Length: 327
Ligand code: BDR
Ligand code: CA
Image 1 (cartoon, helix red, strand yellow):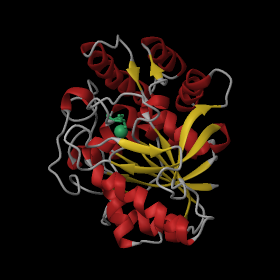
Image 2 (cartoon, protein in one colour):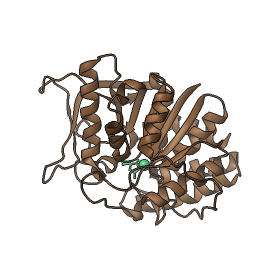
Image 3 (cartoon, helix red, strand yellow):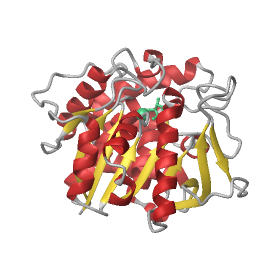
């Protein structure tokens, strides 16, 4: 069973990713090696609390949950409670939990999990890359230790941002960290071309993952568990947020799509690019700048996931995720 580590900032769509990965662990298709929590949608105390509670609700085994970066690596972190709710779980009144965080830092858990299964661990990032950047400082050989890394971040091929005209939220929160990931993989691949490039799933792909009230109804019909009820309550807040910004009473659920893709690498249609993140621009800070034509003369450090090779595309993936979560 392939070990999987999720670095997340739950977060409503992160909660769907957690529920999906736990369901796959319970079904025997992966080995959930742990969760790293990073400050992102909400502060670190809430992302850790939410991760622990969602694991409980999903019936997860006692996997390690470690607190990672409490803020961005260079500039102060701006939180957005209006997107995911004041505590990151929308309208869900989450219960308490007896689970406790692992004493290790999130960066240490990244390194320990990778060293425990050299060449095997699948890493998934659905929040800012801040903790991963710290892990790369701790263990510069991390890219060589992973089977693959799949990141929700950026916006490619001219697609607009969701935070500034050109930046996507996870990257915008900590562009220096995201750029550190790009540079680390460039160095690792220059030394050893067998190191797989990072798979980046940008908004041009993930905005296709649209959760509607019908998905919520189907989830409740298939499973009346507290997990389903709390997810549906959380998602109601996400619907309201998307409606408030003129996108309709629906929710773009980026993170479960990315978690699914991490487990189904053959379903990704990819384009190799050399990727860097703009950290200085007055109007372009946080922009992911992919070199698709070899202007920089550098080897590819990234693969953009540009499409899904599954009939029904992202819609079909969400159906599969829903069925998996419903058990
Ligand atoms: C990303 O930002 C967060 O709000 C979501 O959880 C997702 O990971 C999308 O830009
Ligand atoms: Ca997220």
